[in-house]
Structures are given as C-alpha cells and as structure tokens.
Length: 463
Image (cartoon, rainbow, N blue to C red; front, top):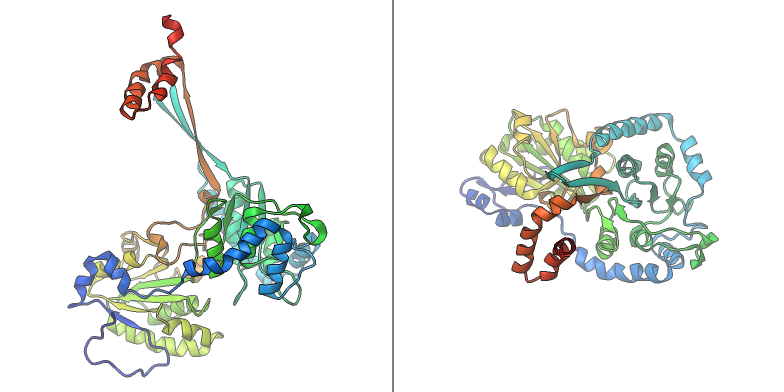
C-alpha cells in the first residue's frame, strides 16, 4: 500500500523513489511486524521456481561429473574450456600483470580483513561441571571449502578476499575457488585470478552458475571423463553470493554440504533524519543500485524536506554516473523506495522489520541509534562510514544476508568455517554420583536402556 500525503506532486524528477507513508494516520501498521513487512519494498525473487529449472543440471553433475559440468558451461556461458581447473601459470600471470594501484588496494583489503577476522577466531573452553566431570567446547575447521565468486554485470575480486580470508583464518586446509569463465579466454576474470594469486589460492575453476555449486557439492574424479582427466574433490561447505540460479542450486544441495546463505540482490537501507547530507544519502543509494537492476535502495526518514533534496541529488548524480540505465531501473523498481515516518522510534521499527543487508545510520547521535538496531547484516554508522567502505576496505565482510534474512542470519565470518565439537569426560565417582538422575530421566522418557548403560558400569562392584 502506497500512501501519498496531501496532493500527489507530478513526477518532476527523472528518478522518483516510490513512497510508503507510515506517518499518522497510517502509523498503526507499525504495530504488526508481518503486516509491516508486506508494506515495505522488496525484490521479488522466486527461488522455488528456479529450483526446478536448475535441478536437471545439478542432477546431471551428480550423476556424470565433469562432462556434465562442461556441457552446462557450454550451454549457459557459451564457453568450452580446455580445462575446468585454471592452470597455475594463468593464476600467477594474472597476479604479475595486476595494476599496481589495484594490487595496493587489494593488499589493504586483505590486511584489514585478516585483522578483523583474526579477532573472530574462537578458543577452546573447558567447563568443570562437577569435580571429575568436564565438558570442553572445541572449535575445528571443516576440511575443505568451495568458494563461489560471481561474474555477470561486474567482476568481484573483493569477493575473493571476503570468502578466502575467513576460511584461511579459520584454518581450513583445502580451499577451492570457482568463478564463471569469460568467452574471450575461457578463464575467470583476470582480477579474480589476481586476487587468488595474492591470497595464495592455487585451486581455481572456470565454472559458474548451478553447475559450479553441484561440482563442489558432489565433486568428480579423474576417471569421470573431464578435460585433461582432472578431478575436483567434494567440499564440506560452499559460500559466496550469486544469481538466482546459484541460490537455487545452493538450496538443492543444502544438507549434502553446508552453505552460508541464500544471497539475493544487494540491498541498502539508509535511516536518516534532517541532519543528513542529501548528497551523501543519494550517492550511497546509487552505489548499491549500480550492482544490478534488481538491487534495492531504501531510504527511511523522518524528514520530507530531506527526501525532496535527495531526489534532486539523485537526478543530478544518476545522470553523471556510468551505469545510468541500470541504476535508474533499480531505483525506480518496486524493490526500492522511501518510507516516511513520524519519529525515530517508528524508523527503527521499520528497519528492524526490513532487515537490510546493509544499513546506514545518518542521524543525530548515530552510534546510539545504531546500537538500538536489532536486524541488519552490517550497520554503517555516521556520515563517514558508507557501505562502499565495507564493500572493500573496512575490514568487515561484505557477504551478508539479504531478503530480510538478517532478522535471523549472520554474514560470512570465521565461524562459518568452524564446527563446535563437545568433548565430555567424567571419571567414575562423577558418573556414579549422577547415575540416579540419568536413570530417572531415562525411565520418564521410557528409554530404560539409557539408564542401564550407566548402571551396568557399577553392577560388577555390587555382585
């Protein structure tokens, strides 16, 4: 439901955001989270429908291995690579040819990501429950991971950094990267290969789409008939963003492997009051709209004057940027818009219900406001912390939950690649002491053999 306050103004601007007015008298909608979510702009992404379209590809890779990967790559990408695995020489050459400015920028991104993710590494903790009885929580990395780096409208060496660094910090021993091949070379984008070289990753595949996810989930051996009789062992966890086909494939193989999340089109929400600079707000909304025509850019504000100024800035800045058509499509689509509210409390209700992938706070006392937010993939505080900083060099991770999943899921981190394993160790007196309680609970659940597993250990002493 879109409400306009007063008489609707004519569309005098080239880029006019859709408006949802939740000020009085529409404010009662804020009391029901489910109803509120239905009012807010959101991209329509039917992963369920896509599943049936990618299922044949995933099943073919599971059954036939490398030949099915090659066939799918030829069909969907128009490329028949001489080798699915990128030669080590091509990775090294991309690293050597890297522009010095880009090399320096990737170096900074890697350095800061290692610093932040290094602080996330958990340590083992032993708890003495009773004298002679301990439980230790151990954290162990998975053995092998497959990291997906998307292609499409843009190239993402930064996503190599965001996926590889936390896996390395976690201690994963076997790391494989895959990214769609380019038609001209049959290889992933040179920037992607260069980032792999800088990070010391030498197992890289020129495969994209659903077939890449299936390849990592099921693997294939050297005898499966692939080019060069190469092999790709299956992985334990698959991470990385992608399009709807990648997302659908990840849903299909979940359970066979672990996945990070079902990433959809990128999102930015900006919570702003009358102190915000409209130039900053407009630039940040545009920055995420640049990704994809389905990208979502949301402004939540208490100030109609700010909104008017932002729209003027959008018209000016969109016309001056490179991807004008793509950005305009995203900003004017049903997934983008502005939500007008009466006060900050109402604004916080809106952003928590929306659960944005990226949330900027551009208000008075921005840090205090940010600390009240419950649901967001990442929160960018104040005018000097734009989302673009987090995309590249903040040290945070840019692989984040989308589509409202920030209300229940977290972004990629070291923890994604770790498993918690409990080690339980009781001695004889500690077990003897707790046996009556275990027996009582076992009988209450009608599982007497559970109790007998304890009493059998002491019966020889009483005979």
